[in-house]
Image (cartoon, rainbow, N blue to C red; front, side):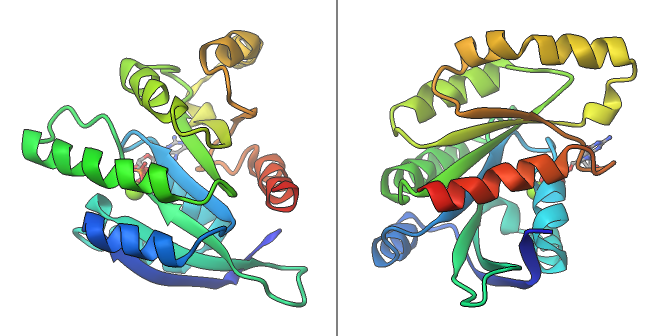
Length: 211
Ligand SMILES: Nc1nc2c(ncn2[C@@H]2O[C@H](COP(=O)(O)OP(=O)(O)O)[C@@H](O)[C@H]2O)c(=O)[nH]1
Ligand SMILES: [Mg+2]
């Protein structure tokens, strides 16, 4: 275990662009991670697996899913208990979202990606069964302009039943790097079965020290 679950604190949930801009302006050069993906892809499950019960409680609270939820955390083996930040960002690609809500999401996200410290790493989660859906591709096209470090994570690997299919997906990695050109790393995990989580956690930790 690298992230100290008992250190995770919920700081706030923000749905107002002005408030988000203010918070980000007041916290320049922060280090940490933002979890982003289509809704239902397993963002909360993955965040809970790494950062514990407090994050689970927040993500179950009604209304929180349309907010940027901000947490702080520390590393287990850091005696100084330096603070890092975790952002649970509302999911993209809702087909059912109203136009108005879609616009609010756009506005909030524009602010988020514009003002977030470039020492915060984007963790984009996609469904291993449906890699690079249209929503994921258009999100990447959008994210590209912001020049942020990004790790791509394929979740729900347990839903891919045969070894052959798993292998086939992994063989696609070079192709995936071509599609998502500026992605630094690609991981294959199952939040449910806890597969591949250690290696991703190690990668995330390395980024905290690299930036
Ligand atoms: N089979 C399987 N189901 C998962 C996995 N991760 C999440 N889920 C399920 O997918 C659904 C959505 O997960 P959630 O974490 O709420 O997704 P979010 O909307 O992206 O936050 C829930 O029913 C989870 O139990 C996984 O690795 N494997
Ligand atoms: Mg969620």
